[in-house]
Length: 371
Image 1 (cartoon, rainbow, N blue to C red):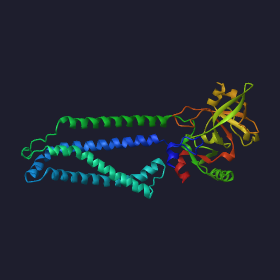
Image 2 (cartoon, rainbow, N blue to C red; image 1 turned 30 degrees about the horizontal axis):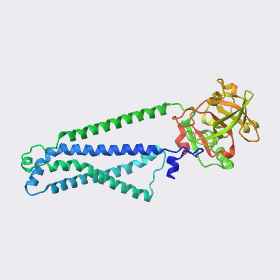
Image 3 (cartoon, rainbow, N blue to C red; image 1 turned 135 degrees about the vertical axis):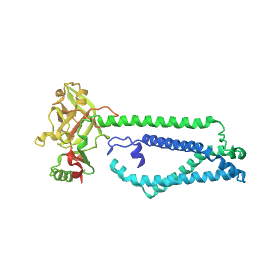
């Protein structure tokens, strides 16, 4: 199941998959944040060490060994780490409902995943403790009781190590801030980029492959005054779309093309608010439209027509016994992610291949209508 969601690139998937690279990137970011936290803790400990030099010197003068002093400081650090862990667990638990609402997805953990998570947390805490106490232990080993009791600064064994930690912390922090700003600009670009269809008002209902059930559901939904239109579709947009071969009679020649394809019903362009730039849209009143096609502007250009009107009326054969005809050209829209350029797309009415129902809801009543 994990491989399907994170590593599959098979055509005709139900919906878009994620990418294992995102997991790796987020894991690296998390590790860098944890490392910066460890370095910050060490720097703070060193900054406070001069205030505790006399205390450490007195403990050693009255018989305390360096191991005992290091053990005391380790227990203090462990207590702080455990308290921070408890606080973080409480904060994460409180934030999950907000994150679920923001993502629109349910976040749940199975018993096995919870056990694995706690094991990773325990291992991470041990590694963190080893990191934060390694350098301080070296500093403690250099403390001389006679000098420490006089309150003289602790020798750090060379300022270069401390400066190196600070430089590394600043470097990683600057990289993370730069990456955050770059991601923010990318997200702003995506939000501002027009997709070519009315994405903000669309709600898709999955698992409605049965034609009779879907049509009854569609009729019932259209009774709601806040639902402006509804259309069956075979795939979610911005996902993995069908790719099929067609034979098109173009300028006296039969041209073989391999285009992206979506099966729809008669109300696709109306529901998605996609303008028709040449020809006309599907119509239930035209019996021949069940064998007709609509293509996008990129497909028309691929056929050699700068003016979309030239592609209207071309015969199309999808390998079946009945040939169809292009009746319209719709305006280009992004039916895949913005990582890919708009490709030639063809849509036609095939009720048996439809698996989802998309409704266009009035924006002002989106939440109440969905409920």
